[in-house]
Image (cartoon, rainbow, N blue to C red):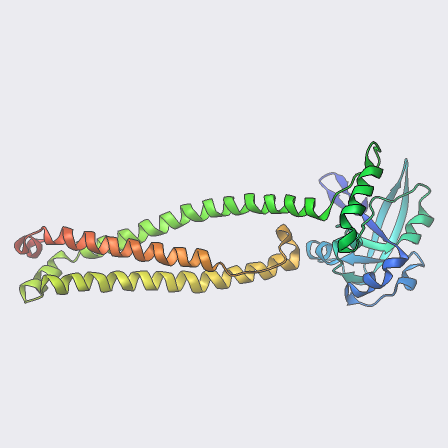
Length: 296
């Protein structure tokens, strides 16, 4: 429990990961700000801050003092650490904990066994055999639970698919509104200029030239809309990705450009533009030249 941070009226709960000596090199390599060795952390007064926790608590810097109450069974141990470094550790090293210290530090502070998880890595050929043995060990033991990388990946994929579905639904609604706005712009442009277009036909513009005019205007609206949305949308999307990756938002870690979705957008807009051009030209030709010139 962080004694200086509150969640409403309650103290903010957090977690500290104890890193065994076997993973000392991995812990030191994960440091991105400051410099600290595993041996220097053994004095029990220094701690490493996870970058994702730092993003949500920017007031914490290297040298900041973190006061907490460490829960050890039924007792609470007051302890103050000094932030020695900021790290970006892999999950197997800290298991999403905001703080890291050597395992020995926690073992000296706590009477009870504080082991919460083991991260086990095997050679590819030994994966199935190791998993079978671990499942046998965990079976019937209420204190053991096995969770594999494949299970974690499947769960994240399902969550990602659900999130994507919601995003696509929102974008579909927004895209429909934008397409209706494009249709309204093209229709209104022709409607308010009926007299002007009628005068141009009276001066010699042919039906073929009129249809070409509609096509060029529609092409201008379409290309302008696509160029603007693609350029600024792509730029905004990439900036959002950089910020999300840096802060750990939705666990985003990689970027890929949506080529398929962009192509579908181009085809849909182009098809709507061609259809609208044909409808407008046909509707316009149904009116007599006199009616067009009389329009005001």
